[in-house]
Length: 434
Image (cartoon, rainbow, N blue to C red; front, side, top):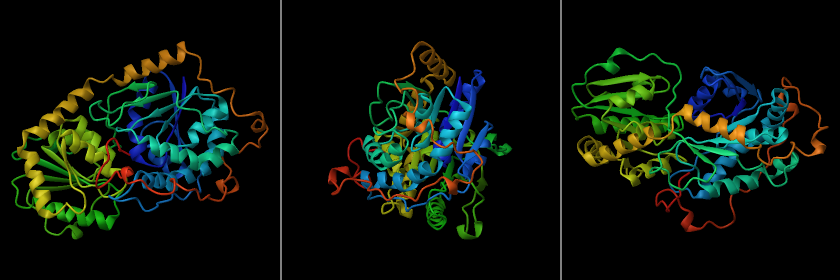
């Protein structure tokens, strides 16, 4: 098979899909990654063939919703950030699909140009998960915002439903029952290329605590949170490893506790298993790495879906969630000591690890896809887009996107009047995980 993989410009969305794409390529299938050109280099760093689209696209960075966000707020965040990306790259993505002719399109969630391209050539789509599935109410609101784009491409009923969904979340951690077209998969952590220092594998004299904060949090806020964490850990007899994507500014951190290592770019896949506990900001990659490696975690969520990710971890008993107004020096210290001494959270974390290891291997997931594709006709997607688009002027792949993009539309994100029951941060409603 030829698989076109499409992703929005976010490592949080791309990286969970990469091990599956490698499994497909290792099984002899042809894989091509397509992403907005500013993210194409990060895509190519995965070692897979990658191509860029929309080279002049300036990614939008709307203010992310905080802890009091409703589902409508989260949907608006997705709409404001990712619908404009789809509007800019749809024409180029369709043209790429027409030229390369993939057998199926695999996309990350919140990437909306890939399904349009799949519909253009009559190919099925596979949605690849990144842990806990988004709330279905978000999809309905985003679909409404995408209506003008779908209508422009001759899809008045929207893009066809996904043929398959790869669910890589342990069942007891998943907040909702996955749909019937789901393929279960174990979660495999991916990290960009990095050299592991020898000390990672040395014997540890005291418990090791990993502190890692994602780039989703603004730099100033990230430094403030990190300083508070270090102050909370200052008097503990532990080894602290600060791991960041980029080298942190040590001058802003002040006096570091003893036995503190400051690193950047280290793979969580080999670092997390050496730790007794992990402190992070609720980033989906950090949450899933800890959950599937049997390590209890303390989450200090700051923005967007981070609250739902770590709140779910606390709900199942594998860690602790402290929202901004709760995360003081003393509460961070007490929560860390509890994770280091309490066996309950560690036992649940180990259970999630065993549960993930019992999920189908990636080569088995590939075999399921192969059998389904070979033994069943393609989903009823028709023969591509309606006839009026067969004569649509083709967009050369190297034309500046300023010539094909349209002015950004303003689309309401949620129905008027929020319902208190929709609140998903601060006071989570049942089954409201973004």
